Length: 510
Image (cartoon, rainbow, N blue to C red; front, side):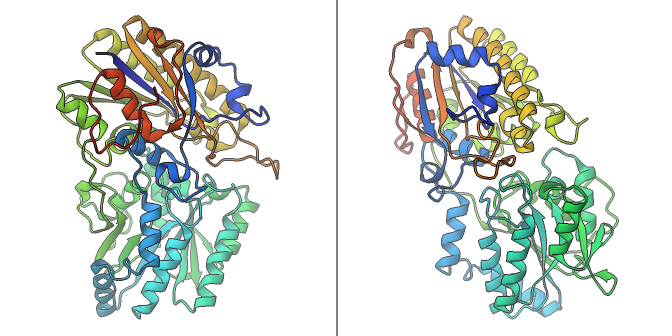
């Protein structure tokens, strides 16, 4: 049986144009040599191929889920959009129960979430759908806590989204108002940077924050301070000198982000009795906290869209065959090589070992440390290969995506070079130990960092194809088929000599 090492280059797509392309500008001798000497193909990571709307860019969550499931899984973006259009969401028992509870108590509904059409963590159309639904319930006190994007959308597009939201409220006669505005850097951290989360939490509870009267002007004022959307300081909208919509005792929250990893921390701050991330100046006694999807099973919160049960995923097949597997990444992508690759399962399968490499915390953004922890991840993998005992290994190098999101091309080049060094370390050890290595990516980013139309920095993911390289001396000369991320698990199973379960509809690329 062949042992297989799967290396995911996060945010590393294929783009023949060198302009603004960190992957081509960078010196990457290992990647270049491997892609020339061994079988290689280009695979799809966006749109319908990963269960997203046509033309929608892929993302790390969707990418790892599709790889681990070995099939196309229709994503939450599609499920929620459909449920709004066909009325299913409005008929959901949690919606009616939430509205009745708040009306009986004279309490407010708060809708926190990312206000953009990036489609990675949320979608503004879902917010509009919820506003329409709750307007029809007769609920009169509704407050929006707007998180600004600037990573999956252009860096200074937030004012436009805020204008769109304000216009929608006016045109539809919605009773809702914008209560706070915060950059996702603060409200959607996932790396235990609690000092950031605290700023967003304090603004939402009315304990602290900058002040403004108009939400659109609040964003424009942030631009004047040199802040782009992601980094807009948490700002409280005031009414006669007091917060217009602070989250208070008896109120309810419906968090409309559908992606879990960046929703967990601020959710914990609101609902955990033993929360120790920071001292909460105010702890509202909420009547309800409803999640759009399941952010964390241990929180046991009501969920509108429960996880889709997927059977016979890749990790399960290995475990059932008595094979050991190893997963590693740094903090930024650890959930992706564990929770998401395992189709939303928190607990490891039998025989599944995990190693978290802490992301660097001494810099606010990764353009200041573009090497991140690539070498440390590679060192851990090399050590495990040398020790033996594993049949499969999965690792993620986050540099292309995380540094790509900063929009700083020079830093992304350095990040790609660090990844190339790590690739060399792992492949050398793996080939010496008789392993096959697959190098692929979950989506593009670093290969297109300048918007071709505006010539401004591009921080969002791309819809470009990504590489799939099969590194095994016995496979030289083999022709690979093109395909998608759903074909990764079937390809690995074929290399390992294991039977592909019927539930996996992807096909081996061999």
